[in-house]
Each structure stands twice: as structure tokens, then as C-alpha cells.
Length: 287
Image (cartoon, rainbow, N blue to C red; front, side):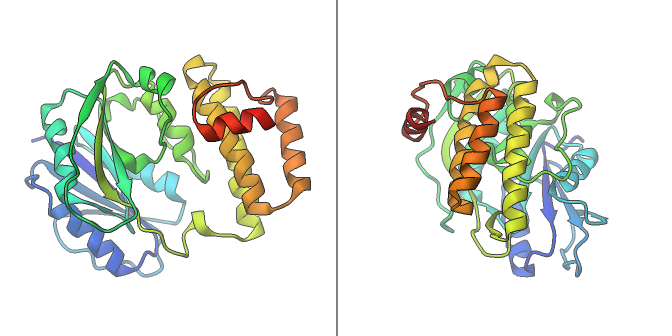
């Protein structure tokens, strides 16, 4: 029997209590053992956790989150895929709304919301069906986090995460959405995002900050190179994110001027006036 959903949990030295809570949240779902496939990819942890039974555990030499997720994809057999970071959790009572749509198998992507507060009770659920993922990219502000949606495995084709890239979701998710014929967005907070020190996204070392900024710039150029006008909104908003992070993470006017100059030479500035968001509108008046 083909599983309904493959949960791909990527793990690298996270505290054992976090990993245990993550896996417990998956086991608490109403899915049967035949419906749920749980794949844990251990990306070169120094001390592997004792993860329990009923899992497919794949250990590899440390290669980064992108490669770990790609490894999970290569082993997944479910009709749908759901990524979960090992230090986060699904909120079972809220995620049941997602499962309802997975069982109907009418959508290529089921999009939902997250919370940073550890609470597990369902929000008032409301969902609407978009004509396509392409339409969503054109008319909505995209949330790129790869754990923020479940998607039909068959729409992946040859699409994979770019190895070695920080914020790898920003390059992967827009391309995946363009492959979706049907997308449903649910107004439920079904994912608990755990904020804690020690993660890559919270590192403030000059080397990590430079790597993070360079990778966002790379992603902007890669998305632009695809030549798809449906990606324009995401490219422009990512450009604003890039400029904002340059200032907030370096506090260097010289660094900001250098990166602005580079964007102008590449044709990403000036920003066209659009009502994507208040933040974007203000940035377009400045840049």
C-alpha cells in the first residue's frame, strides 16, 4: 500500500528532547501506520538520538540541510511529502485539517500557517481553492518555508534543493508552486516553529552573515534567470528582504551601498511601485 504522506524529518545535533517531541507530534496524528511514512535523515550528527521504532532512519555524512532533504525525497514513497525540522513540531489537532485535504487528494499543495507558541488546539478552519500555484505566485505574498505546506510528490519532477545554500527554501518553493495545478490555503496554525539559539538562521558571526546575504543574492539571480514573469513578485520581495537583512545584520552603510550598487548594475533596482505590502511600498520609494 502506498503511504498517503511521507514525513521527512531532517536532523543534525538537535537536543534529544526536541527530536522526541517532533516525532511524538507525528505519531499523534490520526494517520494509520500504512498511511504515514516517517523518514528521519540524520545529517552527520555527532551523537545520534535514540529515535524509537516505526521509522526509516537514514544516516549520512554531514552535507547540509538541502542534501538531507534531497536524501529524504529520494527515499519517500508517499503520495504527499511534508517536511518537518527536527527541532520543530506539527500541532496534531490543527494538522488534522491538512490531513482531511490530503485524504481527498484533490490538491497538489496544501498550504497552512505556523506559530512560535507551543499550543495545540485548532483554529477556526477556513480554506479556499486557488486555480493554480501559478495564480498564487502572481497574486499573493509567498511564504517560502518548505515545512509550511504538504505537496504531491509527483509534481516534483527533477526539482531538488540546491546544495550548500542557506535559505534554500527561497529557491525551491517558488519553483514548486509553479508546478501545482491546484493549491488550497488553510487558515490554521498547524506547525510549531521553535525559536532558539544555535541554529544557522540565528548565527551572527561575520562569516555566516556574509554567507547568508550572498546566498539570498544568488537566489534572486537564479529565480530571475528562469525568465518566468510569474516569479517577478517573489523576486522583488526577496530583493527587499535582502536589502533589509543587509542593514539589520551588518549595520554598515558601506556594505548596504555596495550591495545596492550591485543590484542596480544587475537591473534589480530601482524597484517598481507595487502594492505587494506596506514594507515593499516603502522600500520602492527609497530604492
